[in-house]
Image: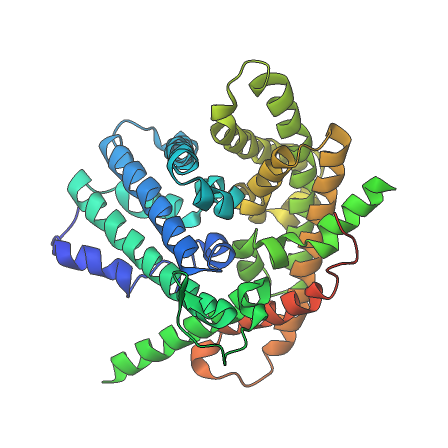
Length: 204
Length: 192
């Protein structure tokens, strides 16, 4: 299997930047765009996704030798869907407001390509410990981008971050930022910024 | 008349891609050429229509009578996955040229969130059977429309000088933002 095992810290950190699921791999864009009209929505979506990712990674890396490879995709999807149902019911029971704000995008975590992608690319080939680290790293990278995107959009769209007033009365909120076009524009700029930073890092 | 309004609402006013952000992955991935965009759009529309019908039947005839709505997500995704598989086999058998055109895009439809989104929205909004069928066709048409427009723009973009960090995904997102802005002009056309 693995030639020289990569250090665990690297396994974690790659999710944050080098293989960041959103900025570098362009996975899971639907929830990224849909729920980031405020920082709190972005954060809760990120946490729910990370929960589903972590649980499915643990279970799938445990079962990786049992699941026949012909039906693995269907098997993965059923496992993921089960954990997403858990997350959905949990949100509906304890955080009804957030559950309402996220709406159908919580069940849509099932088809979030980040989760299926990590199972296929990582958990099905690695042990439990490594898969947990990988899932946490990817999840953190996902949360980070959602949080940044949500904060930017909330700041310019409603002059607040986490419902705290940041910009004074002089600021006239740009409605467009919390509407769909703002999501596309902000993410486009973030991806551009990410590429630019990455290029500079390589040059230095 | 109501059905016509529902169709227009799903296709244009509440376009799946540009206002609900569903199906963004193929929207970014398969929008480089107009011809492949058309094939992908039609394949999605086809699967969406069948999915709308089948998931409605499953939900109202199986899950609700037996009080197992908790299995909603698991059963929907399984239905979609097997449906895509069936459609693929069916097309392969019936029309080889069509299969060759759609080929690689068909299996990808399983993880297209627009399909699952469609099934969830019909349940959430309590559509009747016919309504969810029309909703499925409309959403598919809207997806095709957005995909083809995007592909047309991207073919032109190849000729223009874009700052390097923005090439690829960055500029695609910004173009999509402008498109979403344009589609917002339709808001208020129909209030549903």
